[in-house]
Length: 267
Image 1 (cartoon, one colour):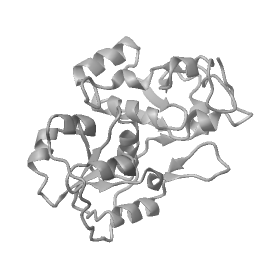
Image 2 (cartoon, rainbow, N blue to C red):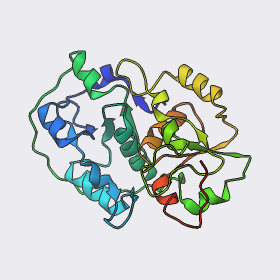
Image 3 (cartoon, rainbow, N blue to C red):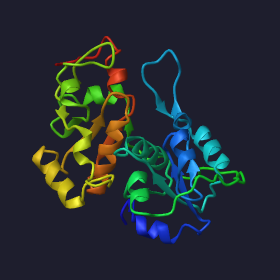
Image 4 (cartoon, helix red, strand yellow):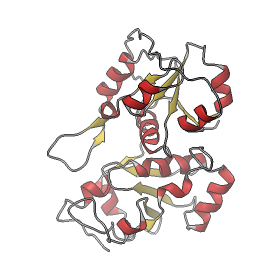
């Protein structure tokens, strides 16, 4: 069954109280217009970070449970992620919930596209009845740390996939203390997988052709990273759409790697 949810199906099922749309756009955008009955997910609530770190992590299980309880999510709710602008933040929300074993769907088009084709929107915010959401599933094993990545630098069975821009990859610009990339990485700018005309992803056929062109094959372990784990999230989901079965994400990404003096960087 596909990760993606057809927008027409969602339009026809908006009155189903079991369907919960999670909107990860900004509060300003949400207050202006949103899908009826959708719930605003504050981005910081799915993260764990502190002012002394250059990176952030996925929020702990307890924080996710608290967030979903406040949003009125029940254990049998059908969760649908809605995002915009290519879907990097929506992709991060998607894998964050999936990581904790939750069954989640991803709206196949952006909110901007949803609105432009005349599907229902509102600025009304419905009252939410809090629940007591508890995660009962086991975590999935696809999030890795710097030590794991270090062990894979010379592994012919793994591909380190840098989803940042070519300028970041080549060390021309830097968003942190060091420029460059993790050694032996392959550059795949994340936006290449974004769909046309407001769709979050290219078609499966086009994605498969794209990954093949870049030498990203299903017989390899694929480890996605970027600067802080957001852009890599989009590529991570795109690979899953194409049934790559061994895909991982280095959540802290280069923001973490580049601050560790004992780790190699190339440019």
